[in-house]
Length: 131
Image (cartoon, rainbow, N blue to C red):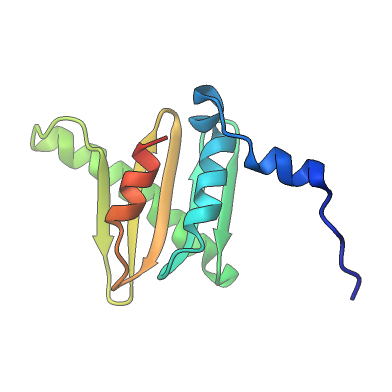
């Protein structure tokens, strides 16, 4: 196995703070999601917008199921909000037997984060809305 050394330049690039535009871009959100993926109980995420999609799951055999669940959760939140005149839905959490999904939209980016049932999602919500 050959290991690559990181150059000082690479470390510097990662450590630089993002501008407001970069933080709310798909690239900035994805960087945030990469950090969130390391949290206890996080199974993976899906990030999509009109031009791209990124899926990162610990179990790649569930990609299709989770993609359908992600899309359905966001759509259901919008429909329920309109049906019951709830106003803007900031996020929706669906809890199943073993997994729960947190879905939200930031600008044009639709995000779903998949968690083990006992995992805390409130810290994740705060981190994403702080972007």
